[in-house]
Image (cartoon, rainbow, N blue to C red):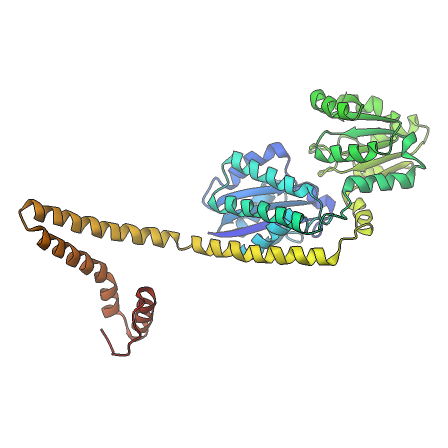
Length: 421
């Protein structure tokens, strides 16, 4: 079986495609069990974020995994072909290291992806789809990412999506200090957004979440009000800035709702940043006057405009990753000989057991110990030599030359041209 990565990301697929392939967190366990339930895939882990969906797997049939992904996401055959990449073993290792280190992110050097990758591994462990190969790959991945982030300046100048949202809001409003902020969701991205916006001292902060308990926990940190998602239709007109990022598979704010909101606000502008994939806000709402709606892809240009990562740091990180990839691939190559080593060990152990039993019978029959030891040593030697000698005698000229060279290398025999054995 081989190691592969099947995926799409912000560089290969637009948001409209990425949101159709994204996995909700609570759907990962069933998806992984379905993927590894047959013989095609032995191990698997799925990394699904707003900017990428990737399947890391240990199996022999990459095209089958592509068909599986289309089936499980209810997509027509070949829908994903223009957007997907399929990476073989060597590229998979390097890719995993680069992703975790923030080198393959929309925001170069951003730290959130490492936590997301660790969560993907925890989900695979819970589903029972993580075996020796992928477990070793990801543990090595996390170690490499830690080294890259601590030994280079790769993350020193990165600007998060949350910080970019603040910069964009400041283009719309003269001052955030006079605006009322609504945060929808209570995950890591919303926490980051809350931190960045709170630093601008908005007039008020409100957190809306599906579960009140988690929403209140986040609201308490920022002296904010907590409401449920059910209150959104009534409360939405009160807010000037909305940042949303939930795990909902369907939009929670539609175009019709925003049309009513604009009327109630007497056409005062409302700024919305939708960081969710799939999107929380119907994209058609962007056509409404006085609605300034931005998605993760819209923020990309702002992020790129403000990136000033030193070229030396990137080159240093890439070199570290290349070295660690080569080291991991050597370990992976070694794994391929394990079955042969085990079989060889079992074979020789069986020969030893046979001769040992014969020696015990001789001792029990009164044969002197010296004779028994001599017979044991001679018998074991003959059995160990039997297979290679039979192979040599049965081989043709070309194969015999290869066998002789191999035996000379394995047993460190002197090179001899004395002819056939």
